[in-house]
Length: 282
Image (cartoon, helix red, strand yellow):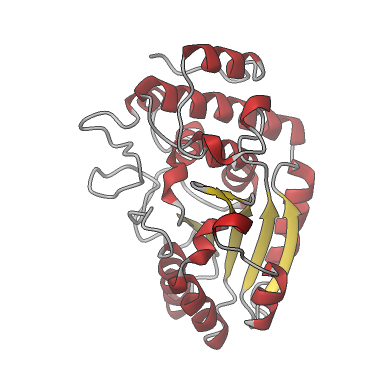
């Protein structure tokens, strides 16, 4: 039985980590990172069967791929908090010679990162390849992947969606961060996504819905998604989130997609998110 309060406490500290990372270098993407803090916490502390000792091939364990790599601050925080590397290393985010680049990269050898990401539209294709490799290896563990909703404007996504259905990639759970915002504005103003559930269903996928900022609902949805694996159809969870979730003045706008808070804004944001696990030292 999941300890919901413990997961919420972790997610709150992760939000503090996100804000402090982007503030310390005045660069990064806090909005989507804050919106996905609950998702990443649930994934790494409850949902996935994974090993922080980390092996690149990921055999015998669940693996995760972040396609919208610009929300690296939330991933780095959760990887550190779940034991992949020391929490103190978060203080090196986006600095010269850091393993914590603005977009996740493999060259620096950061544990937990299996592919460089952030060139939007590519992560789903990589995840499908790994899912098929697991099938070939007789590995019954799952592949998880996160995409952004604005990322669904990329054509490669829909090629991958077709391919996954045709090849019955049913050992993978895709999640779409459906916050309705992207760097230049709302999805509906930049390039409307239309009826997303109907689109995915028409491509032959099992479609589930969840609230990515409600820990209980999210865990229940992922349990339902796991129960659907192995049945011949790929699975997608359309996850509603609020960009900037947890900080009142960052919510409901694309403004904080790629903008860092100044000193005063950081102090105000952190006042809304008391420490739960302890901040990393600067």
